[in-house]
Picture 1 (tube, rainbow, N blue to C red):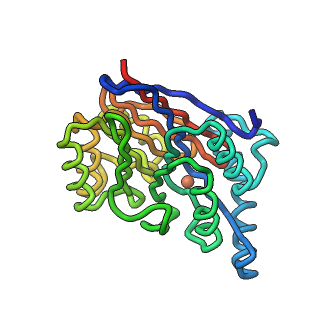
Picture 2: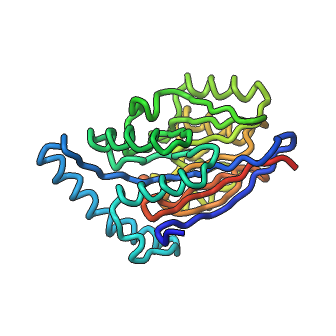
Picture 3: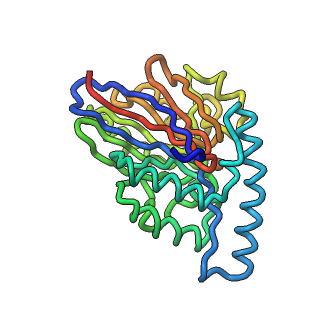
Length: 271
Ligand SMILES: [Fe+2]
């Protein structure tokens, strides 16, 4: 396998689910892109962001004790290409991208995603990160979005402002009322009753805190903690891998930064 990639496996067992369902959870790819249509200023910006991340991603990797070698010292665009090539080969059920997919909303970055993601041949579901806006037409749309699988569903939520809108919370609650098991995707991790101390160690910027967030944020965390339909949650933002429990038995997994080749491979299966 390409030395750029690092695959970390987890399993979620959901009674009643048939077969094995494999997903690639990828986060914080922070793509910095320019192309033939870019202006000179846009090219300059993309090169500047890229060189900042060349240092930044190494220091995040170091702080989490994660590998960072010459294989990871490639551009965000090259790295994303390697992830997609691996996905095209492995054909997971879907790619789950949990935000900061782009370094920021920039025309060449959006064109890049629109060109590369659909052509990989694997369905995808993306949430925006705090570096992004609520829409990247054709890649992610505003509001709660649902991908149905066989006996469970993946639900994408926008929490990039450390809160969730009332409309989205109402929709989440009505989905959960169906009783179909769900895996929830969002960008900023939740600090809930079961993992508050662990998440607070990263600082206030790095979680939606169930005690300190605004009303929308608190209601979101309460929902994740208490809705029986929520079986697991996937997010990013902290740029390192973590596996904590929102409440006992309900895991929240942050994927490490996609820009160092990290893929969290989640297999969902029945008993
Ligand atoms: Fe990020």
